[in-house]
Amino acid sequence: MKKRLVVLSGAGISAESGIKTFRDSNGLWENHRVEDVASPEGFARDPQLVLDFYNARRKQLKEVEPNTAHKLLAELEDFFDIHIITQNVDDLHERGGSTKIIHLHGELKKARSVDNENEILDWEDDIHLGDLHTDGSQLRPHIVWFGEMVPEMDNAINIASEADLFLVIGTSMQVYPAASVIRYVPSHCEIFVIDPNLENPNSFTRNENYFKSSATEGMKKLKKILIEKYR
Image 1 (tube, rainbow, N blue to C red):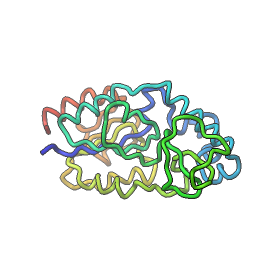
Image 2 (cartoon, helix red, strand yellow):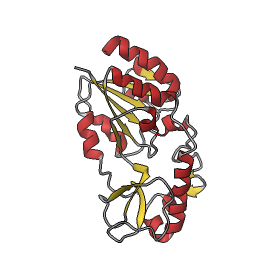
Image 3 (cartoon, helix red, strand yellow):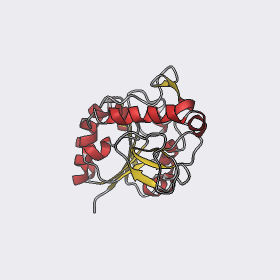
Image 4 (cartoon, rainbow, N blue to C red):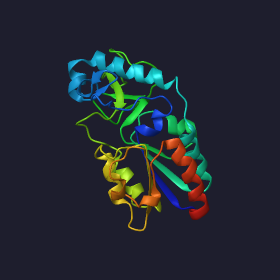
């Protein structure tokens, strides 16, 4: 039986494909205050601004491709039972070939009813004011905004609790509740970290399991280690 490798991924893995990280050093996201484009209050104040913002993100997604790190994770499915828990709203893990993915913060290529978070539609193009769900309500991006519940959190915790191996890649581990997933891995689980900027990685893993590098360079090294040692 294949060992279960659970992956918690963040913006750092998508950044190598050209997708900007969620929050720049100036606290803005694509020159917008995060509160204006990623909160229910922002949507209530100016729904057109929010729809335009995510329409631009969705358009950008069509212009980028999965990178080597995404593809190496997919290749490891030949050797491990891999489950990816991602904070990213893009579809680069899917396009890279991975098959078991949980999106904690929603998905750019989906829309949902403003009145019912469970009424979700696949959505490739722009969302406009006046685009309605079959329930008659306005459509909004299927994104978990600040202040909203994270519907997939329990599912992610259950998967992490059965991990044999756990990989943190491209995330600062500062966004909660997503970062708390690591607390639920079993005591026997071996934890690996790939990130060039993570503060205090030793709180998560041993020095030899920390790769202070980009997602791609770290995955090139880690793939070989995992196959040789754990397959």
